[in-house]
Amino acid sequence: MKYPLLALIKLYQWTISPLLGPVCKYYPSCSHYGYGAIDRHGAIKGTALTAWRILRCNPWSLGGVDHVPPRKRPRWHEMLRNAWRDRGTSKGGNADAPSGGSGDTSSSTTGPQPAPSPAAETSPHAQGA
Image 1 (tube, rainbow, N blue to C red):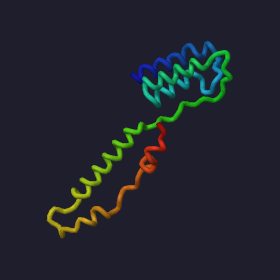
Image 2: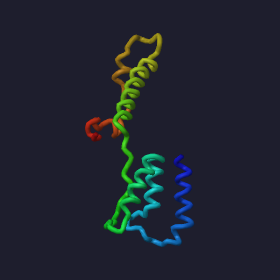
Image 3: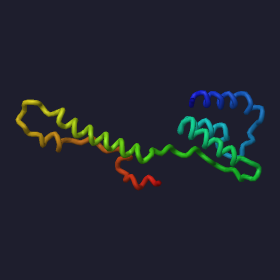
Image 4: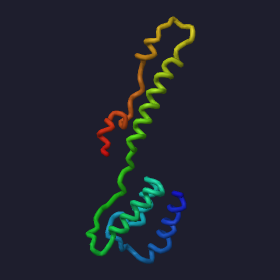
């Protein structure tokens, strides 16, 4: 659903927008904002952000610079990602050990660990509610 909406916005930008000229009070223009919002956030949330932007673009608005907000991962995504990472390291350590070796399994648990991503370093409470 995302790509047909992006195609409609591009069609508007190529056909109707040049006839109207630069009339938007905001930077980037509402059509560029809509394209970026739908591209970054998806069809549903991007359309909602675009509709809110168009409602704010009225004669009583002061305008200004208004960029598309960054995409945030939901809290459940971080918890699922951490659980999946923990599950992978516990199984991965045992799977890498030789089956008939010396029996030393401490090296697999104390070996080099992958560097955590910046998203994993922040606490779940820092994301906000």
